[in-house]
Length: 174
Image 1 (cartoon, rainbow, N blue to C red):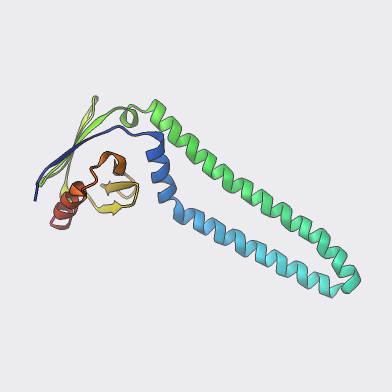
Image 2 (image 1 turned 90 degrees about the vertical axis):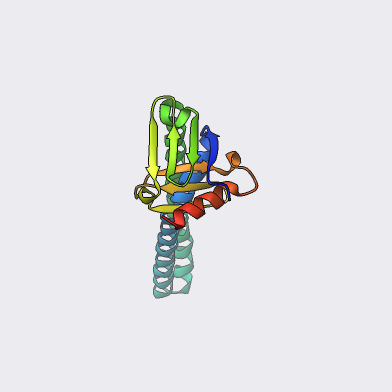
């Protein structure tokens, strides 16, 4: 098996968006579960109130309460959309303004670790420094801190899977 792989990476907005939407999926799921639970509780409360007031009064109250419920649902959907918009703008600014994200990098992966050469700096990580290896359909992420990773976009990696084999070989044997 080949023991060294080199690629040139230039991140695009698409790469950061895919990574951030993937990494925030737990927060979005929790938000949607809480939204569903709150709406269920509100609906149950309104249903109990409508039966308490009698059937004729209860139906008119329910119609007004459904409007209230719909208004809360729309407000919470707008808040969820704002989360996605803030994430998009943050990634866009990172790619546009931060030199580390906008310049091309030479990434070398070998038996000692991962070596990254920027125009402005270099970085050398040993396999012992990498705490987590995550592989998805859009990227490979090598975490060297709880929240910081080296992203290797799949669009830059050859289709034979040679890079992933090398990473797995050295990461598992560290």
